[in-house]
Each structure stands twice: as structure tokens, then as C-alpha cells.
Image 1 (tube, rainbow, N blue to C red):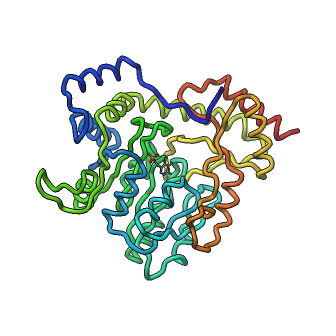
Image 2 (tube, protein in one colour):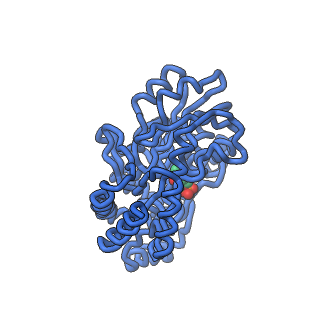
Length: 360
Ligand SMILES: *Cc1c(COP(=O)(O)O)cnc(C)c1O
């Protein structure tokens, strides 16, 4: 059986060694030494100033919205994972759906201004599949209309834009370190900001709003993560270069074989050094996609319809904005298996089935 993904696991002895040390310290959670070590490691590796490790990528989004004190409407796209939209609603704001660019699949900056109203407080855009949004255009619009920017950078680990980590952009960037993501801590996430006040708010909010041990600075939540989760991150960080290289060569192999077929591939944004977090292909029709998925499933290969369904179809979305590109792409896009131990033979086998399905 080949699934769309398989979590990377470090050598068991390395993780065991971390666990033994946690056992000796008997310090299991609450800003412990392994959490600190992971945060230092992330800052070093990503060359960014601040990083707060949190319990998951969804809490990261919620803390970002709360810390930036967003209210009213937030401009976003329906071509993302459900957590992007549900976090906005959970924080009592209204998501306003704007369509995506047909090539890069990120938010279409030319559609943002028409969606701005006096109630708009921010833009929450996803770096889709790890590919960068049109950052400069978005920043220009945000500045002009005095809006905050949050990037849902759940997929963005290792991607660079203009030489810097994607996490360096926006008022806040959020990451997910879930087991299915390129870099993971089993469950986990992070928030990144360059603003010291926002950093302070998010740091308090992650820990119930505690200012110090005896006083509270704001309303908070429990967004902390444990030493055990941080330990997985510390171990995995040692392998990140080989993870990134492997995915690049696997993706290139896929493209080599699939490029002659009637499929469309994601267009990498200019200035972006892509991390190959996913391998999405876009079929000419949903019927072709379904036929191919059936053929792959028959051979015990399980790709994923991701992102599907289009988030504008969520039962709690009432805005009537038309997003035809998102609707269309989400019906035709498929993420093929991509993980560290996927072999050349398996890639060829998968492509062969796709090719036969499209030719018959
Ligand atoms: C995975 C993901 C999230 C949520 O992260 P969790 O760590 O699973 O809570 C949010 N947004 C996007 C785009 C994601 O892919």
C-alpha cells in the first residue's frame, strides 16, 4: 500500500535518547528545555528572529488572529485546508472569500481590493502547497488600506522567498508541524512575527494569558506544546536537508514522466525557492481525476484530493462571493504520494497507472 504521505521518523535511538533525558529531568511540559532547544534550532535553521512553538497549526492561526486583535471581515481564499477558514469563524470574524490565481493557486491580488469594506481588518492568505503568495502585491494593498497580514504558512517549511524563509513575511506567519507535514513534531505548530508587541501578546496567549507567575496580561488559551513533541522536532531538524533534497528529486522524477500527459502542474511564484512539500497535478476534468483515482486505489495507491472540497461550500460560509477558479481547481487537483522513503520504482509504477488511465 502506498499512501499520499508517510511521516518521516528519525533513528529510534536518537528519539529514545531525548526521552531518557526528559525522564531524568521529569520536566514534561511548560516551556521546558527541549521546547527551548527546538525554538533555538528553528530560529538558527530558518534564520529568523522569533519563533514560538505551539500545540498545532490551528491554534497558531487562532492565536495570530487574537493577538492582532482582528475583528469584522478577514479576506481569505477557499483554496486551503479547512482550518484556515474555521479559525476565522472560531475567532468571531467573517471570512470573505477571494479567488486564487490559476497557475500558482495562491490568492489573486487583483481580486483583493474589490473585496475590501469598512469592516475589513486583515488578509489571511495561504502559501498553497508551500508555494509563495504574491507577497509584494499583498503588502502594497495591506499598507494602502491599513490591513494586517497573516500567512497560513502551514506548508512553507524550507521555502524561501527573495532569499528569506517564508515565515519572515506578514504581521504573523503560522506553521503546522503535524505528522503529515514536511517537518513535523507529531502534533505541533509555530507562530512567527517580527513585531515585539505581537510576539509578547502571542507568548502570553499561548500560556493562559500569564504575564508572569502571578498576574495575567490578556485573555489566553493553552497553546503550549510538550517536551516529547519538541524532542521529535529536535531529532527531525537534523534531517531536514536530506528531506528537502529527497522531495526535490522525487518531484523532478514525477514531472519527467508526467509532463507529456494532459495534466497541469503548479506554477512556482517568481522569487520563490520551493520546498516540494506536495506533488499536486491538475486533471483536465473531474471525471478523469475520478477515473485515475479509482485505478490507483485498485493498485492500493491512495493519493489525496487536497484541497477538496472548495471551502466556499462549507455549511457555515454564507458570503456569496464567486470563486470559480477555486471551485474548478479543487474539483480537478490531486496530490500524488510524496514522502522520504518513496522509491524510484514506486514513482514509475504510479505514473504508469496514471498514464494508462488517461490514455484509455
Ligand atoms: C495542516 C494545515 C493546517 C492545520 O494545522 P494542524 O497542525 O493540523 O492544526 C492549517 N492550514 C493549512 C493550510 C494546513 O495544511
